[in-house]
Image (tube, rainbow, N blue to C red; front, side):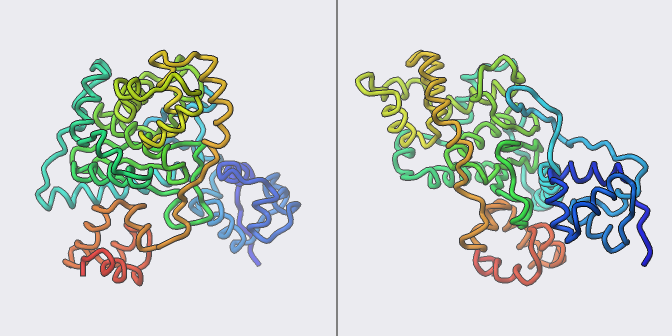
Length: 388
C-alpha cells in the first residue's frame, strides 16, 4: 500500500491547531499513539487513506499535509479578544471556521438583499470612537424600543433575548446564535475563547453569538456587538472587561462594553432599584432577574456608579466567575432541531434561503449548504416555518 509523503512539522502544527493531544488524536484515528508520534517526528509515514482521515479529523485541506512548512493563518476580522487580560494572538480552528462560514453566508445574503430591493442599514458606522457613550446608548435604545415595562413582560432571559433578536432583525441586522461549528456536535465553541463577533456590512450586517454561553451573557454579547456595528468596526470579542480592570483592553472593547452596560442596565434605573438595606448578593439576584443580565454585570455596574466598593465587587466576582464561565445553557445540541436551525442561522436568513430555493433562484443543494444541512431537511424546515 502506497504511503503519503506528508511533512512531519505540518502534522504537528495541524494537531496543535485543533487543540488535540497526541492520545486524543490517535484515538480518533484508531491508531496507537506511538505511530502518531512517529509521523510527527518524521520517522514513518501514513498510508494515503490514513492521511486523508488525518486531514478530515484535523479540519484541514488534504494538501496542507504536504506543505514544506505550516501555513501562516490569520483571522479575516480584527481580533479584539484578551485572555487573562493579555491578547495572545492565537485562535482555534473552530473559531476560524465559524467566522469564514458566516462570511461565506454573508456574501450570499448581501446579494440576495440587494436583488430583493432592500435599502442599506443606516446604523452601520453611524458613530465613531470619539462619539459620547450617551449618544450611542440613546440611539441603540431607541431603535430597540426598550422600556422598563417590556423588561418586566419578558419573564425569562430567553424571552428577553428573543425579543432583542426580533427587534434587531426588524432593523435589518442578522443575528445568529450557535454553540457549535455548523451542525457538528463534536465541535463545540469554547466560550473562554470568544463570546461573539460582529461583521459590518451596509446591506447584511451580522452578529454571531456563542450559544455555549449563559443566556444572560448572550444578552450582553448581543448589545456589545450591536455597539460594534453602530461604530462600524468588525471584530471578534470575549468581553474581557469584566475580568479585571480596563487598562489592558482595546479602546473599542471598553467603549462597546460601556455602551452595552448602559443600554441593558441604565444608571438611573439601577440607582432607583438599588436597596441599601440588603446585601450585595441579594441586590444582584433581584436586579439580575429584572434586567435579564448576569449578576457580574450588575455588580460591575454598581461598582462603576459607586454603589459598592472595589473590594466588594472583586470579592463577589471571584465567587461567581466559575459558575458564570461554566454555565452552558444553550448548545443547541438537543431539543427541536427544526426550531434550533433558524436560531443558529438567523430567522430572516433562513427564510431568505428557503424562499430563494423554492422560487428556483438557488439550487436545493446550495440552499442546504448555506443552512448547514442536507436537502432532505429543506422541505420539512420550509413547512415548519411556513414557506410551503
